[in-house]
Image (cartoon, rainbow, N blue to C red; front, side, top):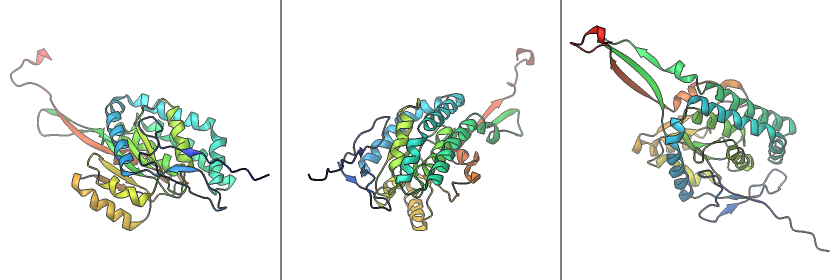
Length: 294
């Protein structure tokens, strides 16, 4: 009797709250150190990225207008759903060459990091906003507003934690994002999209693509409707390329080299990196009006 052929699962991308196939129809098969295939993963094209940006821009108005408390609730809900699927993510990380101890630590840190940034949603404004002294009869306030659509190049060595650690502070601040997952370890990224889909997060706030970084990096950096780019790898040549291509629309570029297994990344300054400062002037009194009128 001939040996049965194993049917590999096909994992789709996540755009606008749905799981479409890549528009190009292409797939790739990442393998682990034991030469076992992880599955069929979409090889996202530039068109997929453009579609994801459109979805992110459409979702931005609603998400940025939501109360900080509501954004906090949704981030916390992500942590709850991820907690309920711990065993699945641990198994996926082990399949992607993590030891059991490493996998458990990565899942636990990812859950804790979501809870941590959920707690900052209604607090970072108090830290970074200000009442400014001015030499006239005005109140002068500086408050933060989200930048807009952020492209995220996820850490290539960390399948789950590298995605969560930068996604969480970016959306906590009211931004929407398009994430390019780890090329060789994409398993947990698509499974995490299922977590997002079950966590009350509006479609389009987070969009996740799988594929080849060299193919999509220039598009992410040059797209005119992307307001900022988060880069978490340590390849200097890529960072130079990103900065050069980002000049046309004055795209904000932030790069990070944190050890994600430590708490170095847990601070509100990453939220602040993707905020714009809005300054408002308000007269203290109107000249010629009676003070009793106020």
